[in-house]
Length: 489
Image (tube, rainbow, N blue to C red):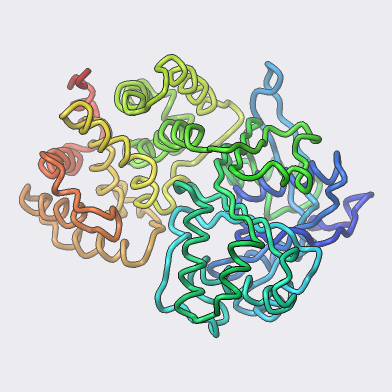
């Protein structure tokens, strides 16, 4: 059977390369690239995307073999009923491997039609690496790569103000655009790139803060044979997403003139302050995902749908949301509970297999961003610990042992973080004292948490107790014990 290529599309068009995209993963393809495809179809946007792979090697070469094409399945509730539909997304013009095509990457900065940069390098991506140098090909960090690219563009157009870019990061960290801009300016300073470049960054480029929302389970591993038979071609980049989407961009309204989402019927809009939208979504939806993943997986479940429908695990997740996360939010409770009800229904989407292991990528940074603020705010407001969030933290530490029974777990996180867990778990001998040593070491790691969590009253002891129960009695008995305990009101 032939692999997907442009000959499968009758109206395949080569469009101007207006977008640089850092990341070729499932989410960006099912969210940003899909929206750009819609804009091309329904408005005069007329732009294509150049994808660069910010880490590792291999994926973009395979994507190029498919002429940048991939199939997107959107499955879920649409206009009140269940809908399952698919389409070929054709807006990606090419992919670049920075380790082999760095010169082509810099040459793209010379393109006068380039206007937008999108990224999703996960929560661990917008970070500073003091080992990065301008002469590296490429730099290790995403902000380093971006600074190098912007400096190339600044030089290519001799600082012309109308050649700046609109930079729209999609990483789930607070005020992602502001943080990315600060790191770019930090590299600009340590690399001595000059005051003119600093002025150009500040005056010619627009960094937007964003909120993204679409559940994207990714590649349909279990059903790919059936899908391939249905499609009639091979596609290594099939991606599955839910029908629901929301994209909130904190930025000037004039961007809509160039990115006319309002003309395409997309649930994407520009606002003056993203904070309330972001806090509610990240704490409830993403917080529930990150908290449930280690608990549910170690229980023996594999997908979000299995977890939310499970009598025991589903009860745990719902109580965590309604009793421990919502009370920490400064929104009307009725609005929060209504939003949570919608989230639970999305988790139940009968069409989607959202694997817990896919959520577990960079779990420590996700817990820090999505769940730790709820845990700390709960302590601040209630003067006691939220039992289920604390239990999820213990489950996370257990998950990073890398074992589910006799089954190996393929962990994915910062190498230093993985080494910390590996070192600590190698010392475990089954005793309560050795478990406490693991917990104390993990909670004290400011590289992960930015603070020493051992300073939170009683947290070390409670996490230790939960982790000891998980390790000695198993997740099933440990979670039932937690559910018997009442959360403070």
